[in-house]
Image 1: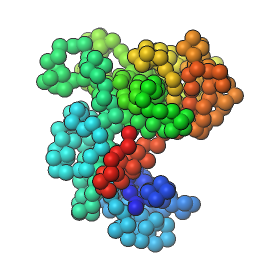
Image 2: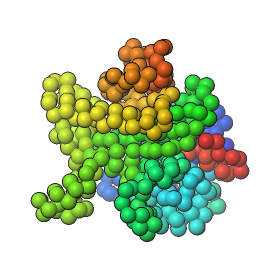
Image 3: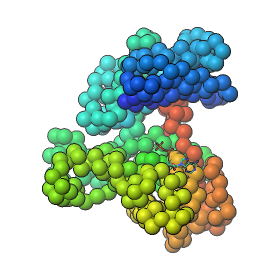
Length: 401
Ligand code: ADP
């Protein structure tokens, strides 16, 4: 059975076609610059690359072009659209109503729309992607997989902010958390990898990419996570500030005669690594500059590491100890130096990284043999989770957690 996995952004559409017999990737592609001059599609099937540049005004056009590319006689992956059994969509915000993945109905679409204010940059294009698929292939099942749903098991004491409860009740202001599909995948995968039972397990997952978040996972369930109402909360990221005294926003707005929206925009887009270093939001550029002795790049590295270490310490406390610390995503999987710096001096917690084993970029235990806490690298695979959930839902099977 073949499942098509989609991640629709405001001007791009990423997709993967997966054969669920053996979970093989058949095709991968991206439609870029939807609605912007210079739009194009690029698809890879094995070593065949299909590219086409033409105006792509809307998401429906992007879906049509994607289906055409997938069926291309020479560089495609399928001969007939009937070969696709279902579409699985990544959706950012599922609010409190979606605690797991779900078959898309009109009611589900209405709820995704209801959450537009909570995910203003992502939920509208996510829904557009779903509707474009429904238009292109009526009758085809669509499944929505939410970035927030894994975190819905957090207890109230962890997800509420310390502000009057009226704001939660009336405006649904609370910590939701994001990257849930990734935290869910790596926390489960690491248990399989280590042959560890779910019950009793205490795992800290560190998803460190452009956007970064950590989660505390107990008995397979998320009990706390670092991102909040929006992905701005938590550790320092590529362009996001992470945690901030909210009075900072007021202070800057008043001093520089800016609106709250303008200051928040700075916190989202011009802060974090780029804001501190003044060089780049990409860790590779920061590392290169730090290597040459750039003080601000070194400071950006130090601040990133410091903010992540604080969460690891906090989550060890939340979990009542920790069995496994997992690193994933662009920085977590590839940046061996940052992993070393993050784990330095955690011996008091029973976690000792092995500098030799740590040289890996693939699935591995990187702690020393005598480390009580296992430190692991687990490459994330959000697409696989979306494909598995979609398959389970369309075949009426239980979703495995
Ligand atoms: P996103 O959050 O956009 O999915 P990624 O998970 O790819 O992003 O993370 C991007 C970050 O990971 C960047 O800071 C980049 O420097 C780092 N990164 C990605 N790939 C590598 C690599 N091969 N080697 C070192 N760092 C990498």
